[in-house]
Image 1: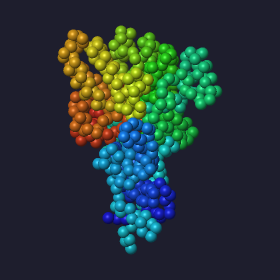
Image 2: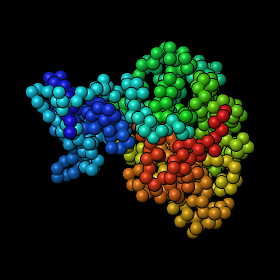
Image 3: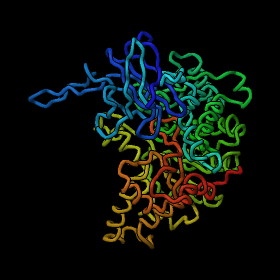
Image 4: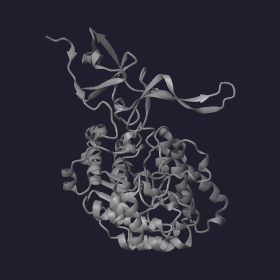
Length: 122
Length: 406
């Protein structure tokens, strides 16, 4: 196990990220709503650069509770996704999982904050 | 002193956008190619695309008809929004990039220096080269994109007018300048006479390895008008490709409200109809020397249609009297491009490969830069293929089918 130094917390704005590399291993470190998350920059689908894609809220369909009629789409107020720019696979930034199949998951890494500095444990 | 803390490098590209260099977008494809030694094997990509409307000002200069050419130039030079003169189709109903989530589908606005263009001859070649070198592709067959709708053009003659202009532009500006790029020439299929003229004009052109029909059209492939077209191709030993597309105005497809649904169905349906007519009307018996290639419908449809047609044919053989064997046996003698390869049900994928005789009939295709492109690793990493099959599918089958020396 080794700690990879990513940078100071103050270097990250909200919904900001860094893509760090140790040899051939690339890791995306994300800062969303005050929390840090880290995943291997390797899409489960075809090995694309998933962590270098769009950060965008999950899309939800508005369904009337009792009538079950559809009333358009909206962005989730809570779920934030990162999207692989190769083919569009989406992953929840908080757990790295695909919304339609929880077994499709980016490889996560633990993030530690020490004295205002961000480290990824590999 | 060992602190247990390792320094890392930082990738300066935080987010890939439409302005990102193709080599950076495909950096992981390059890595995959290096890990698998793709530079040591022959890889032919039988379906890639450029966005020909980016070069529309150049293309319209090749229009034969002086009045149409003048109209085109006037529109392209002076009209607000500079629409690509003459093109039909869903120009603003194209959501392939999923709202900007897949930027390389939307646009490639990356920086290209004038010196690079001068060196290779055209911006399209610079872009193509960046991508095919990243994927370790040795030969790339390139097709247009918005022109894939031309089969549905309401003006009868426009398909041939624009198709010929595009072919001439492609020969002069792409194919003559980049020996790694080839094409199956755009065939204006709605007009068999123009199709024949096109075969005459371009059959021996540099980089022409066959001819391509855009599959979105309502003209039955077994109509007697087309027999002279098939004979001309057969005599020249040039394969005929059917390139799939979607058509939102198709009466049945008009029920669909999401592009993903359209992609799943319409890109397949056009080739399902053409294949069915091709088989049931005995065209493989009439033109046994004409290789047919089915492009960009994936593969899952083939095993489904084989089962449907065999089942039906055995009950109603009097309706297909030219057939001397099962429809599926003809279908496994045809050629298929693999993309977009459905791999999420791997047992079904394996069975499909077996049913279509993929070892000799399947051709790798990237479809780059479109949203569902496949890298060569998609074939290489399949768990059920032996090495010879992988090498065949990635390049040797295409090498046997096409004359890449042109």
